[in-house]
Amino acid sequence: MTTIDAAILVLRLVAGLTMAAHGYNHLFGPGGVAGTAGWFASMGLRPPRVHATLSGAGELAAGIAFAAGLLTAPAAAFIVGSMAVAAVIAHRKNGFFVFKDGYEYVLMLAVVAACVAAIGPGKASLDRALGIDATLDGGLGSAIAVIGGVGGAAVLLAVSWRPKAQAE
Image 1: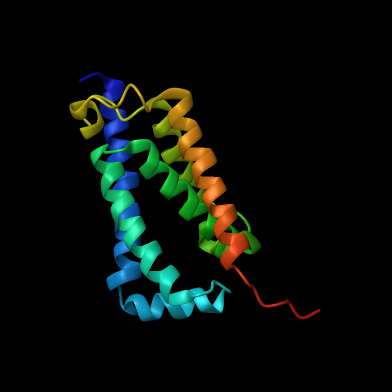
Image 2: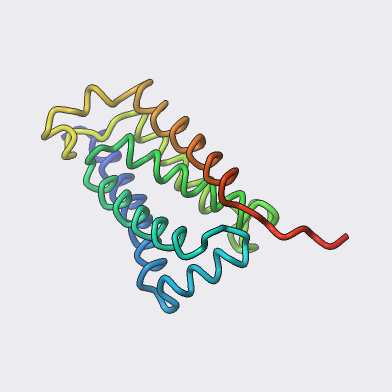
């Protein structure tokens, strides 16, 4: 294994397992799906329970797949999309820094996922073991992650996000 392959493996493991933990928390954290649904409802996502369940399950599954290097580009697309939705709905208004609940954290996860999709999952991946890494690397992997993720986020926001009007 080369240094680059080892570095990609570490990026996939850290970002993927972080995303999986994020999804697990949405499903099984202190408030569970009901708590996540209440939080989503307060931000204008409709129907909130459906979004809480699907985002939690999707983040858990995509995080595990990304960490394992399985269908890396589609897993990266889910991560990019989920983090784009979070950036717009929950963090954009707070600025950049995470200590102010800004978009710093979600931006980093999305960019790491997109970059790994562009580079490819590396030798220590299930994609390599299954022989599909070469077909989803480079421009195609990048397009799947970025266009799929941002496009999916845009559709979700257009269809399901109904924020309350701000008082003037």
